[in-house]
Image 1: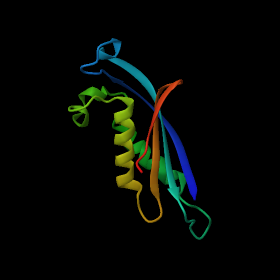
Image 2: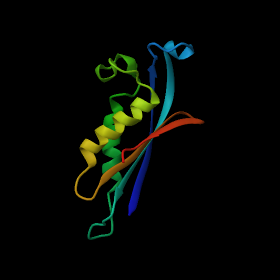
Image 3: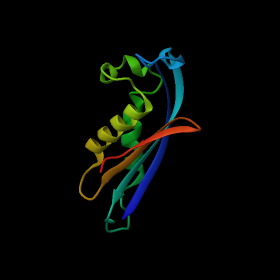
Image 4: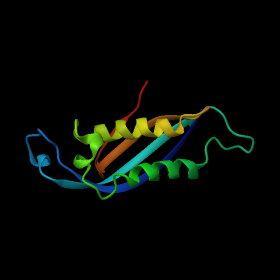
Length: 123
């Protein structure tokens, strides 16, 4: 089994509705997103997945979030854009784009600081 992993960063603001503390105020993070996909096969030249394709798909998705107030986006009106929710959302959206043939999104890690991160995966 091969794991292919990329990391990207974006900056965004959010506020946590219903939270009792400072995070209920508008604030920002420099998010670090790591996407890991798995494949049990290589193509005829020895590549499981071209890094470029994975980077393009993640960059396209993160462009929608970069330098935005995530709390104002339609997909986060019913639920706060916490790191947990972001990780799950990115996982599922990347899966819609990438899960084909032997390629499967395995996990997504979202860090909102150098010392705080969450990882989402499905069994």
